Length: 258
Length: 361
Image 1 (cartoon, rainbow over the protein chains, first blue to last red):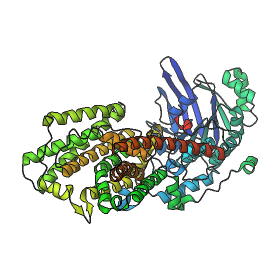
Image 2: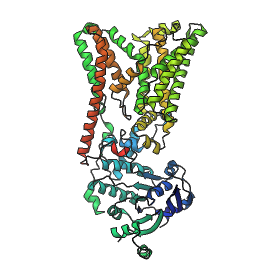
Image 3: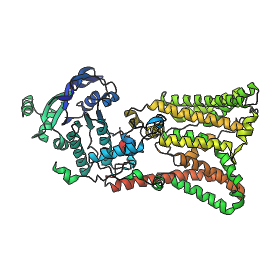
Image 4: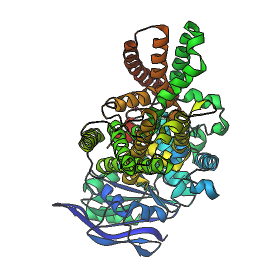
């Protein structure tokens, strides 16, 4: 499998803290890669660096094998790379449709469009189709997002990102605030996104969720990728061991081969 | 993928595309306050049907709210961005003063002078508003402070220019046609205000500009994340509010035939009260032009009704204050109830309050 998005030797320091220390990362189309690590391992920094939210001190990013530089999140968006932030970044007073198209409204054609009139009907139709295709728990595309449950908000945020992310989707702790049923819905959504051929990067502290949905697991420790483990057959103990450094190099090598 | 079948969520999405007008009205925060207005009109209508419901009295009420209505359109935009503009009254005064000054210096009392004066009032308002917006968006000074400052500066500047004495030389044409004139029995000043209100409502509720206004007030960070030029939008919104205050200044000149240097000290608070009574959230993200208009008419109708029924008009201010507090109380209560209902239906944990998630971090 060739990587759609790949990072080589990313480094970034904040003062004396080396958040990323020659870290590598890669994800291919149609797979879910989990990015795990202890607090401060560099997960957030890695995601920011890969999505135009942060400049790195050194290192290279490749998209479809081509070296790229995302100066702003919009640069990444233009290439079909989206992030669902932990805070979701939804406007609570706007409905799912308005949130989905915020900043990318479909305008009416002709003069009306130039005067700033939007094609609301078309946007509602597209939003409804997007939510349906993901099996989203959202039941109304015209209810303010603020009135919805945590799981529904999460699925609005994911659906919005997926609607624009036809290449890579980053999810930062998507299940952190959710109950059991909602978590399962979100994990199902992640599988559906992957099945549509999108590369999914999942950042999570929940090892069971990671094992349930990921194809590969990349472990960051102290700003470096210490190992990549296939999710098939991996155990929570193994992941925790890799995150904390309890596993020695020999074992990690073995697990990489496995 | 066995989980898929087990947990397939209720994916039947409501065909709410064709929600009826009544459904949409019912879901509006401001709809009950419209009921309050209807009740007030009905009560005075029963008490004094011939006087209160007389065409002339109703037109008087409309004329009395016209100038405030123009300012309130801009204020609605500003408050929906979760901002505030205290400077509107002073900007009105300043704009009318320099307009009157220029028109007086031209000397001619005709249309060309009136048009030049109007343009000057508009530009003056626009510049004050843009200054407010720049200070709020770029200099990051809180809107309350910025506009409190420009309130003071604009009023002081107007007093310096005039020595504190009103200029009483508005062109004749302005007064006779715009000031006292009527079109099909409706005061011209009211027709003007209505045009501004309708345009403002369309821009707010139907265009991208309005959508971004709501988005910025709802979650500024989210708006920035999706690439909206938030700073620029804020400057435009405050500039719009200033522009409309400038227009209101010229309308006041036409209506009164004189500048009103000392007469606008409560304009800002009255307009803000009207906007808030109309259901626009002072915390941003929520509001409607229809609500603002209802909020404007309640005080005006009360005043007229009290005068006609022989109640001391001083009670009007008391009543308006009480309605303001009650309106916000009921709105908060409804919102909290709606949020609880939404969570209960979705069987979510109670801790996940709707405002919490997007505000986190």
